[in-house]
Image (cartoon, rainbow, N blue to C red; front, top):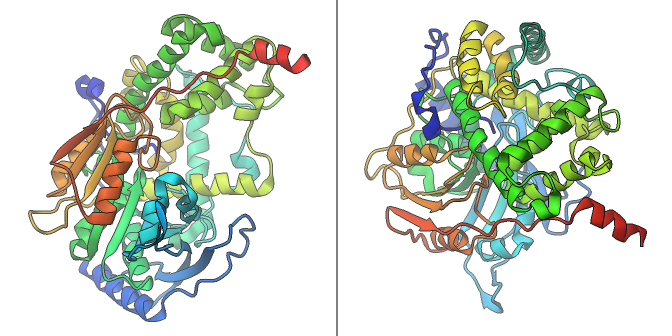
Length: 535
């Protein structure tokens, strides 16, 4: 999820003014009537849950079905699409005392973010210790949002063309390289328009929020209990604004900044700045474990090791598939999740010591057809939703000025973030004006916001802004930590607040803090590991 909030270091950046907003507008009363009609239909039809076809790995107890929603809520009797839904019934058994019955509290619907991520696997979380008490009281429900997976899948190009290797990833691109990427962005935007046709404009966050209300009705729930992570917090906030009376409880995990002025161009500028700090966190951790990885005993020396690997990969890709672009993508994940730190440091150390296998295993692009198709599909939905949601600059000179300025202080992610979003400059569907997320006192039940203080993908300012806009909401902060999404993880303090809220409706004071989780344990040194393997 690339949409995030401004990190404090970005405060001094002067951002070029956006172009005038194209037509699109705010949600209409016609669309609201369409939601009411679709929800009434869904409540009557329900969801015929059964075996999860095409998902052989689904364990016993997981059921699947579909819910029908309008493609265009302004025309609810027009074309309709089906969203794939998964569910595990509440066990209604206390995991601490299997003989004690627990009252069922309804369905808990989860979205993992993206845009473009599938939540179909969420019901399996009920088998994990951190989720068992919640899974006892709630049906755990996941789904594939519109465009994702089997839910009216969106595609913008052939998957074999989408997944390319090896690729460069210059931190200070030349003018000729920028022109190459502009041409690619134009071709990609054109491909989205040609493949989706008139349907393209309907892949939006507002429609994701409307779909969520139809899903609520289809599940037979008078009010929605929802947990959204990352981007899921944004359209969850849209839902809270559009349907406050339909909300029972909502958890916003790794909340993104819902300020309309930030969606989505400025959020992405800000995220590029934020990742630089998180990249430094990772390198500081590697330096503290120089006895294990031998990549350098300061963050600067670790950076030099990384740059040495980049140069070597540019000259000769590892395994014929991993170039600087694949290296950067693999290490970007270390900015999202600190449990990825040991594997990334190990792979880099092994590569520089002559063993490319760990790096190739981490960073090589997927080749299997189904996996490549899933990657392309997720990218298409991400692009369509963000491009449709809001105005974007249509002149590359604006992008160039803003990101050249940011790259001087934050080179790690900046230009790759540009290339991921640049199709929005040449988008061929109408753009909307973002909804002003805001609820007044008493309009919305109290909601729970979770945030890691050093989250790079959704920096902390976004959680503060979300709390300011959702009246009565409560913020729980994981101090001095940066993992993107903290519910259900190893932090018992965080999980205790989530359980108290979901199971009892109990919230802490307006703001509460949890100590950081422990840092990851370093993996073994590649040379020592290889020596053991030979012995």
